[in-house]
Length: 245
Image 1: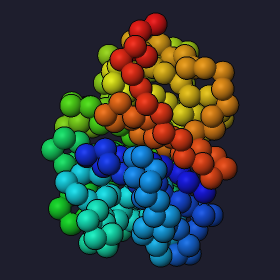
Image 2: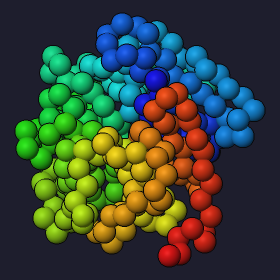
Image 3: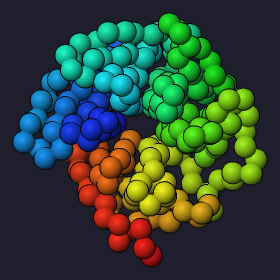
């Protein structure tokens, strides 16, 4: 049951979280696959509960694990830190990290976004309407893009809703994964739609009619890593000509 994938900073490895039934049961694990697929370490990190969102920063893998944010050393594969969410049942979901190292985590059940503040997770924003079923996160230079039931963009410093950055039309909902490709467009997966969507200049459209069943994807360095329902991971290469209509 893969859920999320991310590439390391050198684009040599893909890290994939495997939920294996959402429960606090120690049955989840993270896989590591080389970009050319010659090295596959299925159980790179084991004994987890339900790992979902993953992100790499400064040789550390940050991942949501049911009710805590955990950190693993990418060199040793050992967990080096764990931060419990301040809510009893947050259903932590996605993880996104800013260029300066700010770590954000969405809570689907608590309708919240958390931020790692020193040695603890604290609520960065809670809103039962805007953050309903809080899910995918993506950090821009000055803003945090959020997808769940609704698409929102918040100021990275004040956490205020940026009214001038409206939701794509037609409005996307039940958003799962959000990333940004080499063209500067958003790539989006939806819970209730098996197609891969692109958001460009405020307009949303499916890239194709193919039922990819993508979950929490990640685009980086010309690659798109797409975990898929049914136990699959597909890696796409994006070429410059793909940016042209």
